[in-house]
Length: 181
Image (tube, rainbow, N blue to C red; front, side, top):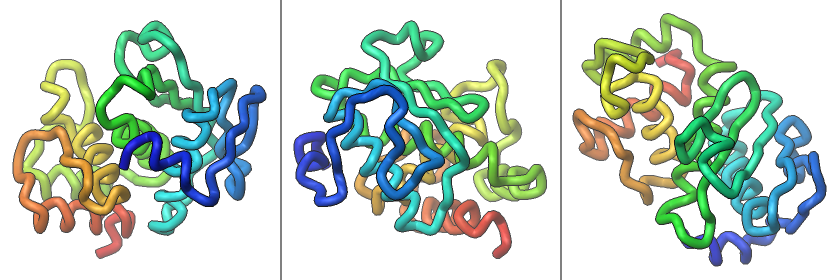
């Protein structure tokens, strides 16, 4: 889906004031977003809602440069998501927004036992840590696979390991069920 297509979504609204809640989701607040960013946030939050995944209280901030994201395109920590993507220029801003919101959801929702089950399923050794390549960290694979599932498989996850749709679906279902399966 292109950013332009997001603007045509019926639930999308163009709000730009500081601290506007995403419609229907008062626990997710988008701060000082241009209209296209607000529409993207509304779409992404809607994908979580459609999947039955309740996001925790989260502030979403869009920035013009990577300085607001610690040098990355996105960063999530402690109920705050920072996005440093140039919406009109970057390929796949939808995946990035879903990915960073997945971090917010994961940190508030999953317990250590579920994280361990995910690591085992994906044949990974480490949940998080700078000493392991990004694509081989459990926390990043989870965010990529959750974004993949929320986008109905339309956005290929940028991960190492098994990328077969059946394997990705199994990991997505495990996480979505909070490892109850």
